[in-house]
Length: 124
Image (cartoon, rainbow, N blue to C red; front, side, top):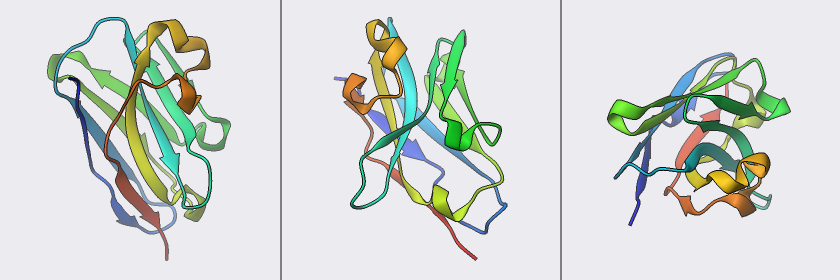
């Protein structure tokens, strides 16, 4: 069974940067990878997804600040976050979904496997 393990969360001041990493326990074909986030009391939302380094989707709220990348050699997906804002504070989850759901990849309903999450806090 595929397991996803996130790392890299923490606390940072507004304007700062963090890099989240997600390591998959195995290699899977025909999946896309993504990052989602959730604040207590709110729905989980898609942040960024990637399909084999061929295509990415980025949520409007983080466009031009966040970048998603994939390292096939190490089964790892990264989320580089820059110019962080207090509203970026959330639990961030790594996820995998089937390629067949790529065109709705930012929807949590398209996801098959979730990581356990890593907390990101942006505060002065």
